[in-house]
Length: 304
Image (tube, rainbow, N blue to C red; front, side):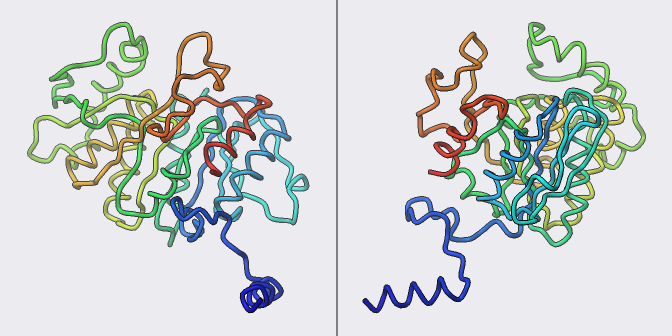
């Protein structure tokens, strides 16, 4: 009886109870009040889809911590559609199908975050398990590429180590030539130092969490992203390479989250993915907000 009275008094005082009571995943015992969530939307997005994305993610992050990156002329977002007057910040950018813009949007989110302790960048069709979210807020960065598969860019613009296979057309068409230009860019001098080789990597890059508390690291990281974006280095070469260079030069620790994805004819049907119920996976992509099942999967993956 005393406990019930105490809980009633807390409720009446305006106390907000943690969203989850699951002790095994005490994710929301500490709200993400010091982490910015950047949602990258690459394609035309309906008002209802953007609002639903905000509504669901706002159960994890305060709406005031959310930045929506929406392509100009392709997406709509009216503040009047959000309940209770709480609205995210909307960043409009020039649409490029997500090839390079996420780097510039991530720079914006980092620089806007001020006293925040981190920035979580996710594409609109990326879902994270509650177990992975519970790991955020430490000094460790999080991505879905494997930083151990790195190879090297030499200062003469050539490569050393196992480069991506020629069957991955993005490498030949959107990475090789930009990397050569980057190697010759004087603004890279600060990263070369006395080295003749820099670690680089490739991999899926629809998710990245960076700890922003170290200002020196953030100045270096955003400088790298600006150089890569200026030379139009493809996202899946740019983000992993920027992160492993930060590992090499600043001893940044990176956790590789196991990614559940599929490339065959079941790609649009995540309920059929062999990995969808496997607890060893922590990130799930792509689960499209435009599909009727997005909210259901958000509840299943992120809210349980």
